[in-house]
Amino acid sequence: MPNQLVFMEAQNIKTIRKEVKEYINHADDRMVRAIHAMLEADQAGDWWDEISDAQKASIERGLKDMEEGNTIPHEEMVKLYSKWLSK
Image (cartoon, rainbow, N blue to C red; front, top):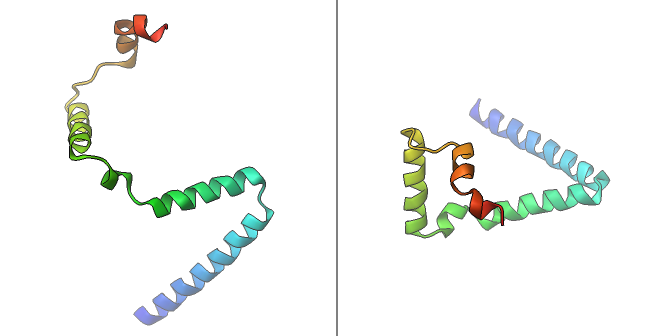
């Protein structure tokens, strides 16, 4: 049975590839560019692997703060930093 599932999945992928090609052939320029950008981004790899350890640690601290509720509402930040935001 597992071999049959692999075969069925391969057939599904073939069908999907054919459908995608047909969609692309009829898509407008904007959509073709969007698809191209998506495929290019997929080839580029994971941005997480490209950032420094310090950047990763900073992001992880921010996520931990968020999980613990140590955040400031947007409206409060706007009030605190309005003199810089208005320039």
